Amino acid sequence: MNRHCKLLQITVLSLALILSGCSAVKVYDENKEIGHLAAVTGRTITPGTSQSIIVALQNAESGKVEDAYAQPYEGYFLFMAPPGRYRVAAFIDRNDDFTHQAESEEAAQSALLELKAGDFIKYQNLLLKAGAKAIPGALKEIVIGGDTGDEFANFSIGNVVSLDDSRFSQTNASTGLWRPMTFLREQRPGIYFLEPYAPEKIPVLFIHGINGSPADFRQMVKALDRERYQPWFVYYSSGLQLKVTAAYIMRWLNTLRAEYGFSEIAVVAHSMGGLVAKSTLHFLRQQSSHPELATRPLAFVSFATPWNGHPSAQLGVDYSPVVLAAWRDISPQSEFMTWLHEQPMPKGMRYTLVFAYKGGFGKGLSGDGTVPLASQLWDGMQFRSQSLIGIDTDHDGILTHPASLEILKHALDGVQVGSPLIGAKP
Image (cartoon, rainbow, N blue to C red; front, top):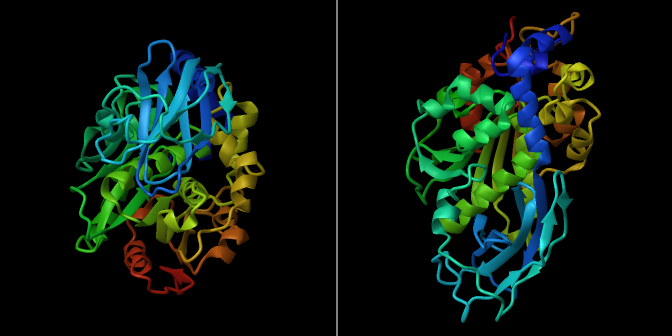
């Protein structure tokens, strides 16, 4: 069975086997724990500054900073945490030391927040002004290292690794699908580099699909012009809600931008990663009241993405004893899919839609062996694309097919590629 999309080929019988016995208990418990987390969102508002802002979630009882990250400018923030009593605080980091100087840096602190299991608290706006209460502690290790000492909030942001790193193993990727809390505690999701940041190179953000990892893009990286581009890799728990994943990717990108100052990126995504990518691009575009400050996506290339959802995911929602959040999102007609279809693409961005058509999709339907062709070619995304290309390969093969590697190079360089089908038999 296709290793990236086992979920999307499920039957009621296979679900019963996968979720039987002890494994079913663990999957159930972890997804229940995820469902008990609370979220708080809002936005920072500043007196016209373009300097970085540090936003932090403080435990109201102990004063400990449970989570923190940097924004390159004012805009939306998101925190997720276990139930408890918290405050959100923020300050303008004028001297770039990740520590609040009360006498010279505007700040703000929210009212006491009582977060209960499953809460989603919106619109906690923070107007940063002089004289606000200081935020204790030096926060650089938390912001840049993603390390709070709390198992849930440990992220990896800009760490240099190899694609052979053991955390990218198929076993760990599968953990991210079925046991999201174990993944979050042990594997450190985030954005990884293959080399130190290079200001003269454009970042290319690779986003894997369900049950995938950064290692899936090994061949594409080999085809990348490393003199012009630096590959960055999102690693995330693929069983989580896609909007939550996208919001965290926005957070991680904001932290990197606050540290390094880049303003342009390109995005490459496979399978469900395309849905995550489009959500992330929307959040980047919407996060600030000053669109000219937003990170500018130059190009977006999606490979074999189920743009109109996946019919097999609905089986999991309807019949599985444990329902993963990602299944709900990628079910056709889901609230997430409806929302995603309504979001426009960023202005000025080149979008290339690449689909695969070898392998079929049961009952004689067309597809790539995993995703129906009709979903890959949902007309809403066809209309939004500048290039539409089909390849005679299957769902996994599209990541290593020579045509895909050539398409990627052309798409990043802004070359229009319009051949309707590549690899088609004569």
